[in-house]
Length: 265
Image (tube, rainbow, N blue to C red; front, side, top):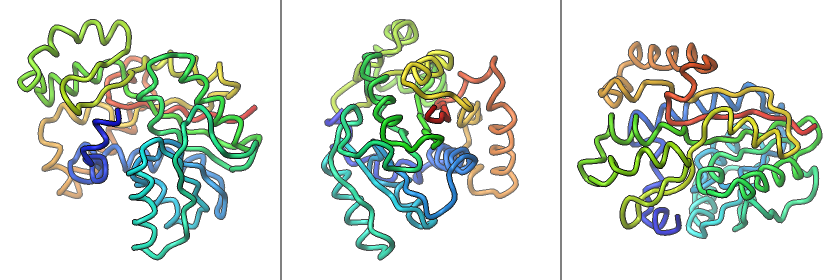
């Protein structure tokens, strides 16, 4: 994981392609459905280089940013200084053991940690920590990678098997266990969820699932998403399609990401 993020590719991942922009815009609208009114305090746990932290701060929220990667913390602090906006409380921390007090924030974003915790006990512990620090009734937004993203997005759409030929021989095992090993030096590695599995893990942490949606849907299968993002009408169709199918059980695992919205009981 650290080798992957040391490459620095995460800094602009959500803006350099149509797929990244779709993930970012859809995640924003899903979060805004349940986010408390400003000026609430939002904890962005595993927030990476801070794209969501900076967005929330620009909206007037007080933001607490925590990430396991020191360079991400440095990037958030540097970006905050450049923008001149409200200060973001950023520090290094493990999502499974946070330095934040009980019921100290109004909402929690957990948009990255579940990607990298291959043991169920660790994922549930990260969710329990989110439940611990959020105030009663506050929302927790937990993102996961879909179990079938490696085959559908990685191989069928991006053709990553041409760069990593062994992908075709390992994809069945990934879909069986959920564990995605690194494909090569510095490549992404982590865990992939079935929708029902994400719902069950969130429930096991003391949170109550209020909503579970697919983020992008099947948009990546178009093959020309980077071009569609530049056309206002085309992009509107992409977003409308993702919304239309976000809760359809038969299609929920088709996209690359899932988000569960839960509340502390």
